[in-house]
Image (cartoon, one colour):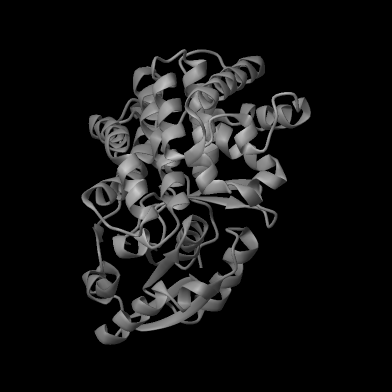
Amino acid sequence: MITKPFSPRDIFAQPVVNSSRVFLSPQRYIQGPGVIKNCGLYLSLINAKHVGVLASKRGFSAEAANVLQSLNEAGIEYSKAEFRGECSKEEIERHTNDLMSAKPDCILAVGGGKLVDAGKCIAYRLNCQVGIIPTLASNDAPCSSISVLYTVDGVKDVVEYFPQNPAFVIVDTEVIVNASERYLVAGIGDAMATWYEARVCEDNPVGSNLVGCRPTLAASAISEKCAQTLFEYGVSAAENVRNNQNSDSVERVVEANTLLSGIGFESGGLALAHPLANSYTEITRLNKKYLHGEMVAMGTLAQLAMENSEDLEKVTKFFIDIGLPVNLEQLSMHPLEQFEIDKVIDAAFKNPLIQRMKFEVTRDLILQSIKKADDLGTSFVKQYGDEAYKRLHD
């Protein structure tokens, strides 16, 4: 079992090559209706003989049941591991110990973002490959070589890095369109940040991606294409998923949420939006009520406000149309609740990623940016309404 944490900066971000460009991605990405039924065939590409399947109790009676059937048809043995909801050190160690004796060739993580991140951690500790089968398009975790760990209470704890990205990511869009519209919309909120954070890292001469190196042209192009896809197809894709219908719009947005954003954030870099979003988890009730991408949406608006970006109004209006929060009230906060806002700001300020902005970021600047975004969002809600948000949250 591997116990030593991996640091990609020790490999890539050496002083003599600190201007090197590094691009990371999964080995294979497979998307389409019904592809989950072929996962046994895909596993033959890595010559897997025994697989550890991580899924929730509900998942084993739903999507993971199709996975197990495919493994049986392919003659691949498996061990089942039931995920209990939080990507915490305790949950990860429990499954690592339970699966160790089986010596799996691969861990298959079948579920949402936290389960996916836990699967990567377990695979690293067991020194085996990992395959990701997301059942939601609610975040960009599946394609990366990174996991975010939380305490058992849901507060962001640490980030773990791994030497390899997933061996494959299998996204069954039949599964995605039968999930709640809110999950797809949250994924759009997470993915929209990708371009705005990546362009900060690209424009800043000392900006870097998540392995401490300069972003490649490919990463920047993918990040920009991600935002373009969401603006063009996001609203129609959400409407299709609301009616449990697949479409070209859905396929495009699912790819943007999962592949384009996953590559973009890891290889393009993060700036203010994600550190601020993760800081909202310091408020306990937000963990239980809001999805990661919904908090990222608020972080993106604050970052655009801090930059005095011309895109702030465009993104705010798009978020209103799609049903993402655009002001503190829609995130169950109030601009006058200074204690809670200060708690969020303090957590964000401790995150070194915010220093990838091209100017010095102070606590007061974060506060003013949150308030500026909140004021604009409140004004736009009065002007355009909040029908989409209420539909997803009532």
